[in-house]
Image (cartoon, rainbow, N blue to C red):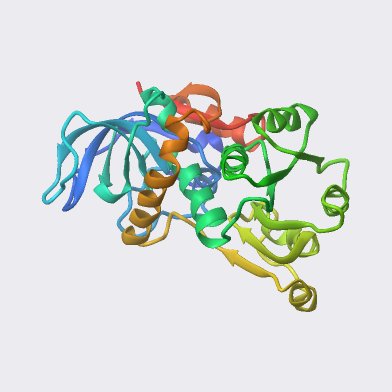
Length: 326
């Protein structure tokens, strides 16, 4: 088969579409013929040499895909050859084929085509596990989403609104904020021109956010704590703003706040399977009912993955950038 490889860390030009050995599904796995994959920030970090795949995972980038099952490994049950699926991956989505544990498979939701489904697994599992399973966002609470126009952000807005929460977002352009508003965001903050702490406090009568979904890490740590409501929960899922920050524990104590930090890729298969099962139970009905949809900015041929990385690195997109297999 062909796949995107990374012969050496570096810029987008280091991504090479080349022939590699075919994957073989192991025990409890299926082989998926990939129709589409999607670009995530983790893929960029892997390309740069900062985020290696977990032991035993495919060396090729790509944390989600959609396609058709072509073979079943030993002990793989619940699925059949020919089933159309989307999948959460530890790696290998930028390829013509990928082996996937059955616990990380999802059916293509009714109403979506097979390519669109590639935009779902990573973002839906990330948002549901962090905002709802860990931070326990409840109806009537306020969620602040940093990077509201990203793949994660566009999904977080829709899911939070679907459960009856109020949503604040940060984004860097008027166009991106307008798109967030179309998806249901209530409070729009241009982080280039406005102080998100002050704007959030003003819009919530001084209360702040009950839950914050943060992709920045160190850069926003102090201000995120200031933006929390009493009993607020800060969920950190990214490090775009650095890895080391100073935490004012007194301020956190004063808020009776909590901070969680998780990554999805390195979780054990059993934990991923539990998240996927929760997503299928709670989120798939919302998608099939038309309440939540993936936001796809553009489709790029998979051999041209370098172009897709340039778009995502430049933040020149809203929602997801898909890679379409030849």
